[in-house]
Length: 386
Image (tube, rainbow, N blue to C red; front, side, top):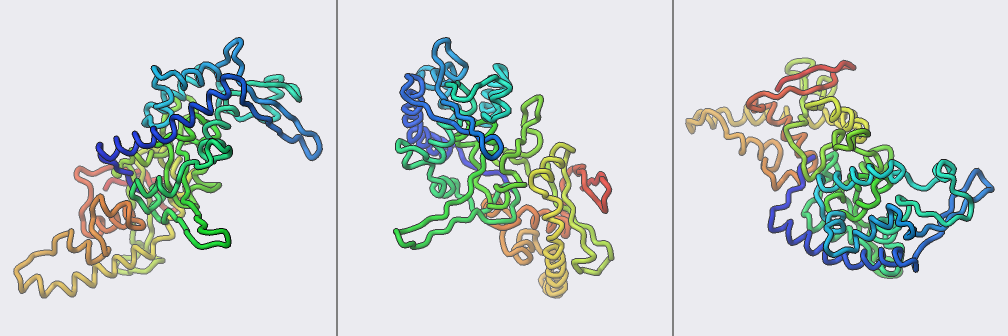
């Protein structure tokens, strides 16, 4: 759990290269739909026997919302395609608001129920915004399901350029990649990339640089983050989960409680997660089950407490002899945690935030001024100020 940091010069380089690599390909793909030369057949089964089949094409006369949206993507004087590829969170939400203003149906994939609702008949040629946009931005561009995108998004290269190795959602697992030699040459198991704003709901953001979040396998599978939408249903604003590119460390805090004083065992230690509001608490537990997974790390807290106590005892005589009242927190952290407390380490060390927060609690270094958090303690919701 940390903020993915990119300095301004690096950001400009990464986004301009990304734009250069994918903008032209996307425009070529879009033009095929606009001139009527491209389309695809979409099938959905009903029960075990009946199959509903639709041909998806863009309607240009009269111009549908899909047609207007894609034409704007191809207009070099309009910024829409650039915003779809490298727009920040605020730009992404502005586009979502615009699509929402036209119709809520644009956020729903084509299903048998939707077809019935919109009176699509079997065999019809239909213009369905969500399904056509998903085909262009997700299936063909992100997944590479067409020769023009024979080299889709390089997930491995994407993660390497961000320079991170720990999942920014949970902070407790690596962003895994495996490279091995197979019968047909080198085989790579590429890292997981989550769409922060789900590609099933917002397919037009399927290739957005800042919507692609490198993460661990657990966070990107059901029932965790996967296709769960962090936006509020009515306002369409991010409320249920902090965006990793905008993560605020102070809004969540790990806290421990020792039930039996001076008894440092897993059974006597209770780990809690504090949130600065109920929406955040609901989101992190609904999407990532954060309270439950970190409650199991009471063993790590006990180990840190034992190392802290042993170090204090071992160093007490040395302090006195050298005239030092206490060891600097930075050196103490190195001895107890095995790494420095700084921005470089937070995206490289497992459970960095968890270890940092609990360590600072152990040495009496809390927030100044104090911050109020909501926590669960033995089945009850409490307000804790630390």
